[in-house]
Length: 87
Image (cartoon, helix red, strand yellow):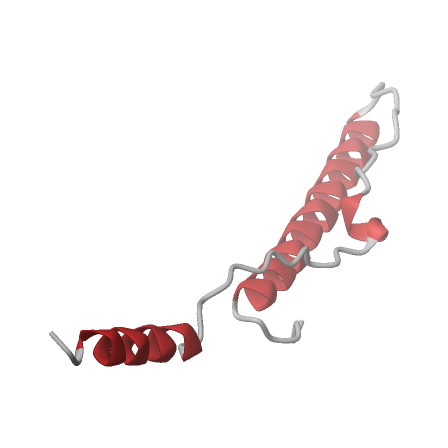
């Protein structure tokens, strides 16, 4: 029992020196251009050619939106891995 205060102080001194884990929340930077909606121009479809143009507008808008989603996904993956985005 005589050594109890010595052992007690050594144990607490060692446990106090240990590095403790901390949670640090980092918000990834997503450019404003990737956060904008993709607009499809409004057109009247009177002929079959108009329908083709309308369809082309929608396909291009979908490709743009999917490209933005892929870019945001790349930025978030890099943030989770704590690395720089490579895309």
